[in-house]
Amino acid sequence: MRSQTIFGKGIFWQAIRSSGAPELRFASSIHTIAGLLAILSIAAEFEIHASEPISAVVSGFRHPLLVGNDADPVLRFEITNPESEPVRLKSIRLASEGVSPAAAFVDCRIYAGTNPEISKSVKIGSIEPKDSVIRIPADFPIPVGKSNFWVTCRVNPGVDLTSAVSFAEPVIETDKVLVRPVIEIGAVKYRFGVALRNAGDDGVHTYRIPALTVSKTGTILCVYDMRRRMGRDLQEDIDIGLSRSIDGGRTWEPARVIMDMGEHGGLPQELNGCSDPGIIVDRETGEIFCFAVWMHGKPGKHQWVDDGSEPGFEIGKSAQLLLVRSTDDGKTWTKPENLTRVLKKPEWWLFAPAPQSGFQLSDGTLVMPVQGRTGRADKETFATIMTSRDHGRTWSVGNPGYSGGNECQAALLNDGQIMLNIRNDFERYRAVVVTDDLGRTWTPHETSRNTLIEPNCNGSLIRIDWTEAGRPRNALVFSNPHSQKARTHQTLQVSLDDGNTWPERLHLLLDEGRGAGYPSLTQIDDKHVGIVYEGSRAHVVFQKIRIAELVGTAVVESKGR
Image 1 (tube, rainbow, N blue to C red):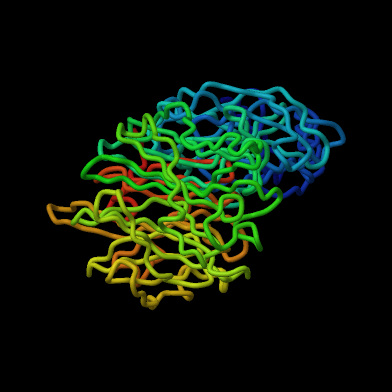
Image 2: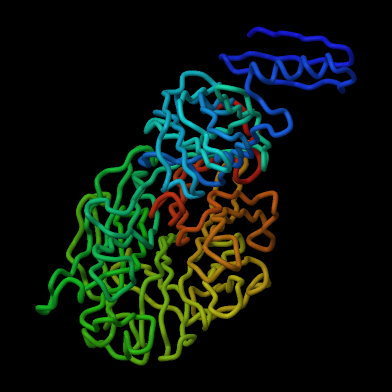
């Protein structure tokens, strides 16, 4: 770098050249004609108008960076060029903290456009990062007026999913000046994840409604809707799919179809849709159970609306509850069994699984969240649990725990009660009830309808257990879109007192962008929690979080692995 100092009477200018581009700093006032002439000569040399410099504002994004995505944006620059002609962008430079960019990213790119949407921009530069300071070269005209530039990163498939990275000290290099942008918000910490399912994967239009669990052997299992033709709910051509990971979520096997009613009854696939999978593992036998709701016929209808499902048991009138089983860790599955006549009350308009995972009590009892309709009106709905004490051979359905809600998930409390956390169709707060007799009777919890906010969407509640300093610990973890207005701000919350309080210091924002929500949590092992949700960066996102970080006992290192 070459520094040139120019003195005139009453003036002091310093021009710093870096990579051929100067940065000018004015350090005093002008008192003489000689000084003015000196400034004009410098401005002519560098083609800079001191009164109207190029300026920029930089902002970050609060979303994960995903394995499997081609490019996830990390910074957006709004550059204002007051010149009468374009200035050429030569590079964007930024420093990083956390995991090494060489370990985290395949490449980093610059995109440019006059539209504020990155989807309408063009790639103008790329580099494979080697150091903590990333310099992405480019040679592109910055047009007169306002324009937008983005830095994106493509994630290395081998990245540590529990690590993070942040970016700071951005510098824009042009052929005339170095521009240090105004930083709109502080450094954003980017976590990593996996784009488990995206639009168009395996020719499927939309993936929705994921539910997550872990098998007896430690295999992570994620079930979901495969909405083949369009994104709408039933009735449509929808099958139940499964993704498996045997290495803690780092890699995933190709999707399997585990429930497909084909052209049952001579009707086309779009009139034989299956949706809303719920999954539970018997940790004593290793058997895995996946439930879903099946609609036959009823074109244009919805099982939760009007006569989309009706009282009784008849296929074609009432939506059906189906079950498939696996005894080989989710590799193969049985043909669907119809449990409607066994479990649904004839007066109920609908009985269906809650699209979440269940859990097992210490005595072997399986506890599965379920939902349904008691009438035709929109709020004649309920949430409860069903249980099995014989390893899934037979099931007993509890009484409705809450009316005016539906999708739910249950967790065990320290006093032996079971807490049911419910999507609430009245206020924009979660409904919460507890039972001490496996769902025969229920009591509203003190936080019901007044504590956990929601935009009316599925949420997830689990209990986690771990050992700290040789002592057993447990907590509740809850996740949903943390908003009362929209399905944004996908957040994890932790309660250390059985759900009585959810301290803000134990909130972890994963994705502030708009998605479809529908999170599902599971404890992967004694050190990690896993989550899937419908995020802003993929139809189904998987992320892995350290328990010590979640519960506030970890010192988060600035340097990752």
